[in-house]
Length: 72
Image (tube, rainbow, N blue to C red):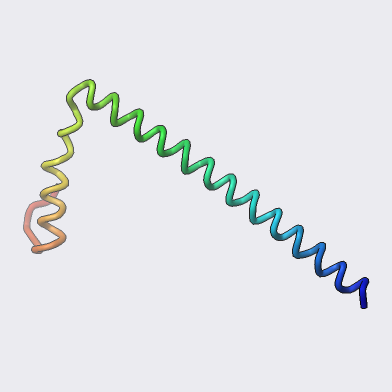
């Protein structure tokens, strides 16, 4: 009986370790992506391109909310 409990405990322990490594990898990718986006936005701000996509976003919002005829 104790042998079965120990095997289940080890399997559960291995699963927890595996899940933690997946979460750590996902978190790492998320942090790197966030830093990259912040860097790109900062460069666009320096080049005064940060306002460029706003008209396209407004048209897209208009299309989604009101079924407008404008296509971007």
